[in-house]
Image 1 (tube, rainbow, N blue to C red):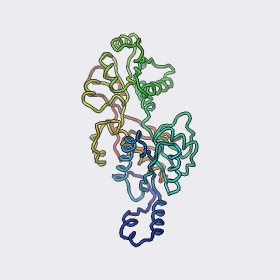
Image 2: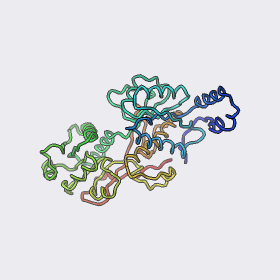
Image 3: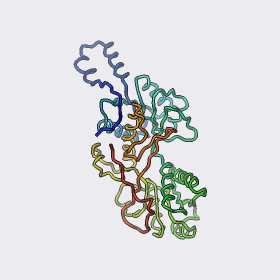
Image 4: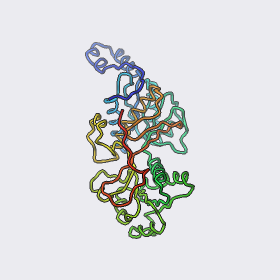
Length: 370
């Protein structure tokens, strides 16, 4: 199963040729020359902070996804992946990016951290497409060769707002939990809701003593809300869900999914957006990657990010002109601003609790891998 791109043909050099029997008779100079020649061949560079302890788990899953995509979807027309390990310092990331370009990279996947993305945007000479694995912010210098592909929680919350509005709901109440992601979820929803309606949604901070869990049902009813959005972690969602009643629809983001059956029972009936890789893991098209699924949904999402990152980078490397992809992380589109948007699918935690979803919020069919 191969991606259908009009890729340029490149020559692959087997490691045995460079380091096998022929190397026994080669001089040191000839060996160095051969290695330099191999390094200058066209390649898709994978620039990840493998030397960073804090980012090790994320790096391993993204790299596994990129290499799995290359194994199963690659062909002789697609330049091979070449690894460039970095630390988590911005100067080292820039140095490795420059080295990759000098050694023949025709596209680069990475960097991973937002600070590194902004640093290369400000200081890098980008001669090839660079697919950053993080979102842009309002300080990111827009560059023609710089693209953003991420699992942005703000973008997810924005899509949820659009979906709820399209379904005819007009009085959502957001329950903001603790943690670093909660305010970002809330802000992403608010920004989208303001664009759609011109009015801000109601936000209840769960850390506020004025919003005790036992009173949430009454507070939400008094606000005349027609829907509730859980901008919380899985743990906090399970704590407050029993107090919300069954009179209105309850939504969440992918953060409510812990991947366990117990969580499904506690949050029965909650609707949330997620990527096809997790929404419909049984699809035959996904079996080609021979992935032994992990218990952590977050690690699975990072693996899927790597799969789709390779496909996008392959298209950018060969200048195929393709702008849209049916990916495992969603329906993807390369925007004019360099941002790759993801259209997610709606999941429902098993177990009906009450309420009838509006027509616009029915689950979409997950796209297949071409």
